Length: 496
Image 1 (cartoon, rainbow, N blue to C red):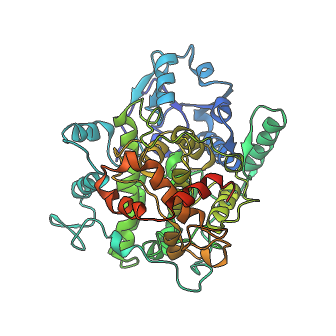
Image 2: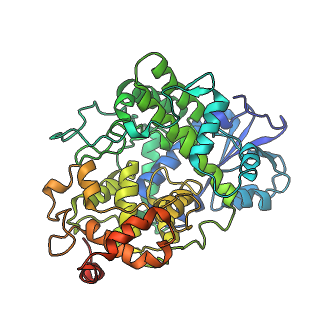
Image 3: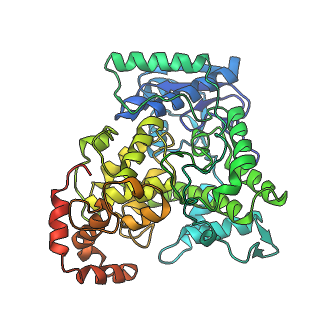
């Protein structure tokens, strides 16, 4: 896709999420490093490192074309400038600031996604009732001709998800794949680490988690290497083990490309085309390629557009399941030291160390736990945004408020993503060495996910009783002779 050009007399304002060539039309650039980007709430140290490293690497790449300003707030960089243009920023806050303080700034259409905002809005306005990601994904596939033969999807259907639900190989401790491609840190990373240490020491910022050796691409060149490595080495195994988890394999066969895409250094069109080329060359099976394309051109694209389509109020007040519990200290501080449940401790340790987990750990471990315990969905969304290295203002509302916590009452997902311990047992190796039994809901060794599932249904039954997809689980719950004991047990449970 050829970017739309702004006025040649103007200077391109470069903001978070716009650190790649896709956002550059060749003229002068103003790269804003505002301290407020890192100080609003406690952020994962690795996330701060990645985003600041990406910013400063972009300054180096632009060379003499770049004006690098270090300010306290974005306002400080905008006031008094009347020579700027900007690709519409990827958050409501940044868009409001640009429009308010950047008087005279020319705003160009957003970039970095498969479908533009105007096209999605036109399509969404034509929908009656609820619309679903699957409908959007099918439309994109038809429009682009991706994995299509004439007017029919290759493989006979648009989603091959039923082929991508394998548990981990029995007895395996890892998938046996080579380590993913990792970037090599440089002097910019050293400088970033030094500055973050100083900011923290001076009390200007507060971080959680560990600043791991940089594991994610922050430049376009690095992103292409990471993409090539994934397609050549891991894409084939991505599909079947997409939903599987192993305690000693934190990356599994996942791409690790969400960070460079969200930084704006990797074009999702390039990502999709690389996967399609692997299928055409018979280097990756159809189900794996389709599943990956669905993540990028389907779900990622869809939640971006929902962020704008639902409007400013979405994510601020939705609480359909009346969840108001405060996030506990161990959760906020990523402290797994007192967690006995292996699935939860593995996820929390991985998050502490890397700032990243794959989607099943996010949805069916952390999200499932928070849903069962009734954590406040607005605070939970902020937490996910802050502690995940790929967390952005646009990506988390639909994922957390909508899909994970069902706080919007079904605008995004048709039912809550709640499950007991047996699902985790089937899709991971966690339960074999855990002190809790996934088959038990009562007693000292009762699995907190299994017991928590029934306690969750008991608490939310008034809100869910009209949901057809929840009719059977609610019916099963009503037949439990020990339900009151299970609910009381879970009310007493502290750190699992």
